[in-house]
Structure formats: structure tokens, C-alpha cells
Length: 179
Image (cartoon, rainbow, N blue to C red; front, side):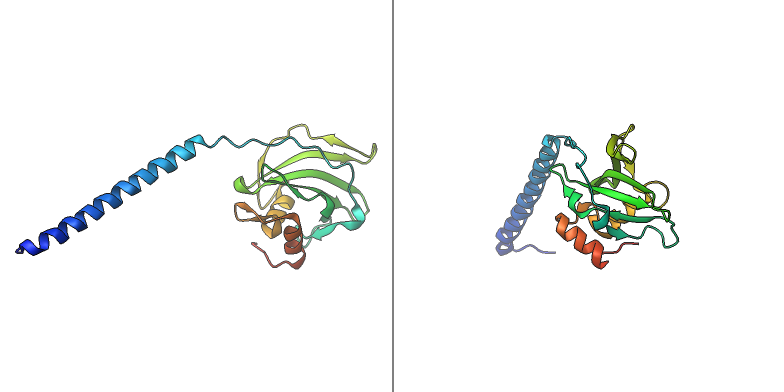
């Protein structure tokens, strides 16, 4: 290929733009890395269980079609904390009327659930959970009810699905199903 003198300024300008673009990208990558390093680690905010919950106003959801338990959350207890944890009171009621209630939190970003407290029917008070550890959401086992809540309305992938009103509407209409 023969290079004409008239093509040199165009090639030089093109090479200059390419070099400037490469330096800009490298600079942006360094800025992004520096910003990531400066972000403080996630900190969970302290929380107390709600003073009460209302079994009569539960918003029901299905964990498994053949379950002998009926599940629901009290809409008045559904919150999104400053730490982006979705907290709620979940109630599981047996066919005999026995009630188990839990104050839980879901961290959508990491797909984890934590039980903060269990309702003691005998004392009509919350009993703080002993382990208080975050557990991975799973399709089976003890975290299944929280997994269903996360997938059907509380989380939008790894993000919180808006405010509590939007979450409740999504759960109610069943328009956001990820099963």
C-alpha cells in the first residue's frame, strides 16, 4: 500500500483519537476501581421486631400447593430499611389453627434471609432468634417461604422491588412470578 502525503494528517488524527480513547478508558477503569475500594462494607442496621402483627389482615401466598400450612405476611410490618433489607412478619398457620410467626429480613442483593425473632404464643411476645445468621435462600428446606416471597414480589432479581406498597401489589396480583 502506498501512503500519500495527503493521508498522513488523517491517519495521525485517527491514531491520536484512538490513543486518547484508550487513555480515557484506562482512566475510567482506574476511577471505578478506586471508587469500589472506597465503598464501605455493607452494615446491617439494628432493628426491633414490630410491637404487634394482625393475623386477620395477612396477605397470603402459596409456598407449595400441597402444603398443610397457610402462609401470609402482615402488610403493616413490611418495610425496606436504610440497609436495603426487606423486613416483615410472616405467619404460618396450620389447619388446626396453630400459629407460628417470624420476624424476618431478606437481603435481595445477596439472596439471603435472616430470622430476627419468633413469636411466643404463650407469652404473647417476641423471642429473639438465637443464631441470627444470614442463610442462603433455597427452593427447598426452611428458607423456602422466604424464597417464594423474594421471587414473587419482594425482590426484583438482586434489587429491592420498590417500596412496600409496590411489593404488596406485586404479591397480590401475581404479575411478577419467577418460579
